[in-house]
Image (cartoon, rainbow, N blue to C red; front, side, top):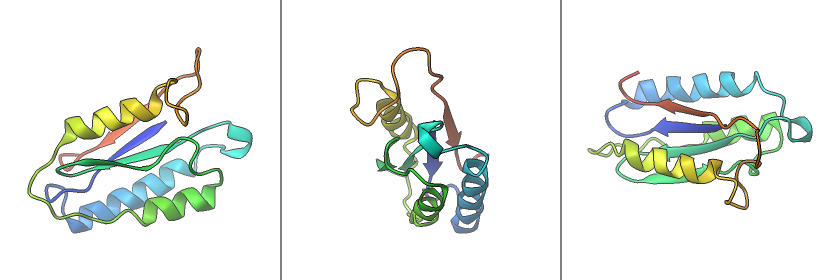
Length: 115
């Protein structure tokens, strides 16, 4: 699963903190043991960044810490397409740290300043 997080000015600092809390609560619902679920995080503002890929966090505690540490960036532009493209990349089976090939579901959750 790829989480895609807006960290631009359009979301605002307080809503950004709410979004981080939401994502921490969301990931708590998944079983990360033995690779049952794999979660990556992409953040975007005027540019997109892979905060961590699907192989990056193997425990719930490290995943929640990584989510909490994503910085708010008060940029004027919101480049949602760049965030979606990075998410597509980390979900791609051709990416070494990407999704499993085959019939494994690939899920992306997009959080924007408009939500």
